[in-house]
Image 1 (tube, one colour):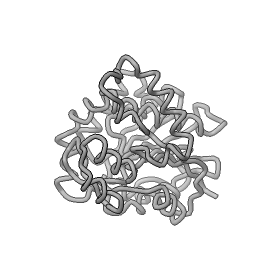
Image 2 (cartoon, one colour; image 1 turned 45 degrees about the horizontal axis):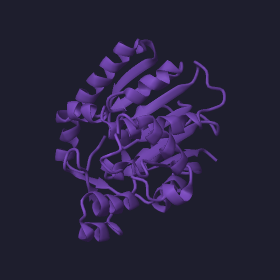
Image 3 (tube, helix red, strand yellow; image 1 turned 45 degrees about the vertical axis):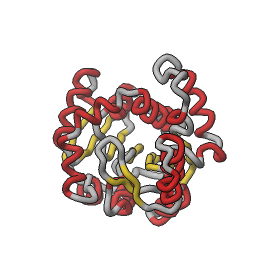
Length: 266
């Protein structure tokens, strides 16, 4: 990924293990599990071993492994060699190295990295918020989609979620009010900044990339604000099922921490 600054780029290299640990927390698991389960609702009907997927900004490769276990061939792309090392290890431990191809590269250069109409599924999860030019990624992804049955899944930070986070978690009303119109927020894991999106702004970007939005889901609507007496681990399945129901209902999805959009070629 091309980040907003050199320091941002380096955090995904030096903080790769830190990110891997985060994904094992209930919050990290919930984000990944919800996004993947939502994705399964929209995988091409002809799901079969001949399907090819691209995971842009693959991180630890956890999602790629899940796709590979479905028999899908997956290319994982990341600018961080440390992340790719973790992804390589994950694929080996899962026994799916024959279905996972690792590629080091910049997400904003998709057009130069892959041929037109190469993939049936493209994932762009938690990538756009770190980029100076997210449109370059979306345009490159649109070009790389195979046909109108292929899908793009995009997961981004929701501005409304940052408002609730500041008010409910931190009790900081000033930051909550500022986040109502903020284009950038603070990322808690690494301490850097992240681009904030709204449903309208994300859908406008997808449309500008000549893509048609077919569905939207909210990810982590209320899990972050549950009282301490609710165990994030012991009650994980109940929380997950409730989140699935809330995330598919627009009135609740509107305030989720993340927006997940599914799009395809017209």
